[in-house]
Amino acid sequence: MSKLVTVSNRVALPSQLQAAQGGLAVGLRAALEDSGGVWFGWDGGIDEKVSGPREPQVQEHNGVRYATLRLSREEYNLYYLGFANQVLWPLFHYRMSFVHCNNARLEGYWRVNRLFAERLPALLEGDELIWVHDYHFIPLGELLREQGVTAPIGFFLHTPFPPWDILRALQDYETFLRAMCRYDLVGFQTAIDRDNFLECLRHLDPQPAALPQAEVFPIGIDVDQVANAARRGFNSQQGRRLEQSLRDRRLVIGVDRLDYSKGLRNRFESYELLLESHPEHRSDVVYLQIAPVSRGDVPEYEEIRQYLEYMAGHINGRFAEYDWVPLRYINRGFHRANVLGFLARAHVGLVTPMRDGMNLVAKEFVAAQTPDNPGALVLSMHAGAAEELDGAIKVNPYNVDDVVTGLHNALTMPLSERRERWEQMIEALRHNDIQRWRLSFVDALQNAYRTRATEVL
Image 1 (cartoon, one colour):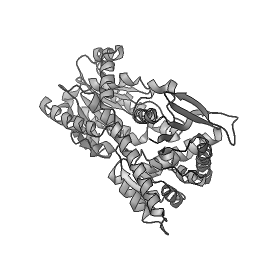
Image 2 (cartoon, rainbow, N blue to C red):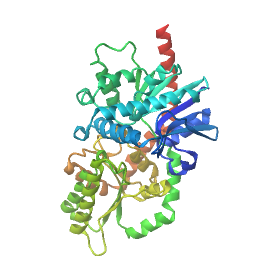
Image 3 (cartoon, rainbow, N blue to C red):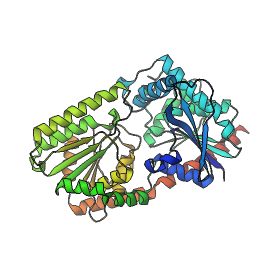
Image 4 (cartoon, rainbow, N blue to C red):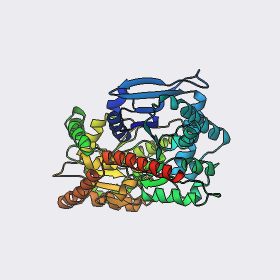
C-alpha cells in the first residue's frame, strides 16, 4: 500500500491531538497511521528572524512523520492573513465586498506555496500518494510537478467553489484554474462546487492539455467517536453545570468560529424576532452561542465581533428577567468533549451559515443526540451538509422570518417527528462517515492517476 502524504495549512501535532480531534484531523490521522505517512504544513508559529529557504522540523509519532515549517512575519501577513483570508476565503464564500486583492499578497501567496513545494520532495521515499488540502495550497500540485514529483497528487477543497462570474474577480484567476488542472484528482464537498469548477474550466482559452478528474466527496464524521465523546461531555462537570443553570429550560445552541460566513448577524436578529413574535418562548428558552475568535487581525472579523457584542447586550437588555437571560454569547472555545456534551443537551441545533463547504457541527449535533429524545436541527440551505441531512429543518439564512419559523417549528416539534427526522439523518451519517470519505478519495486518486498515465501513453 502506498504511503499517504498529507499537506494542509495547519498540522495537528502529536502534542495537540487531544485538542484537535474534530473533522479533518480525525480522518487524516487515521489514514496516516494506517499507511505510515507524512503530515506536512505550517506549525502555526511566526519567526520574526526567519527568511528564505529553511528546513522543516520533523517529529514521529505512531509511525507518522509530522513535518512543519515556520513562517516569517511577512509571509504570515501576505500569504495567510492577506491572500488566503482576505482574498480567497471571502471570494469562495461569495462575499465579494470583503475581497481585498493586491499584487503583494498574490506574490506572497505564491512564494509560500513555492517554499512548501521545494521542501516536500526531500520527505518523499518513492511510493506515496500526495493529498493537498484546501485553498491555502491551490497551486502546490503544479509547483510539485515543476520540482519533478511524479507521484499521484490530489487536491480537496473544504470550502465552497464559486461560480464563474464570482471567480473572475480573482486577480490572475486563469493561472489558478490552470494550476488546479495539474492535479490528478480535484475533490469538492458538493455537486454545486464541482459543477462551478467545471464551468469555470470551460471559459479557459486555450483549454488545458489535460483536465483533472473532478469528483464529489462530502466529508463525514466518526459517528461513534462523536457519540461517545458527547456522552462523556454530557456527564462531565461542565455538562452538569450547564444543566443546572438551565433550570429545565430548553437549550438552543450554535457553535461556530467567529466568522462573517457563519451567519451570526442574521442568527442573532432572528432570535430577537423569535422572542418578539412568539412570547410563549420567553423565559422558557436559552440560546447559547459559542463563537471562538479567529483571524482577529482581519478588520471584518473585529467588526462582526463588535456587532454581536452589541446585539447580545441589546437582546438581553430587551427581554431578560431577573431570573432568566435569553442569550449566552461566549467568545472562547471549550474542550471538544464538553462542546459535544453541550450539543447533546440541546433541544435545537442552530446552524445557519450564509455559505459553507460542509459544516461538520451540523453532523456532530446529530451524532451527539440521545436516540430516545433527540433534538431538532435547524440548518441553512446553503451549507453543504443540507444535501445529506434531509431530516433537518432547512432555512434560508438571508431571510430572518424563515429562520424564525424554523426555530419555532423546532421548539414545538413533537417527539415522534424528532425521532423520525433524527433516524433519517443518523443513517445518512453512518453511510457516509469520515472513513468512507478518505478511503473513497484515496481510491479515486489512484484510479485518476492510472487513467492519466494511460492517456499520456
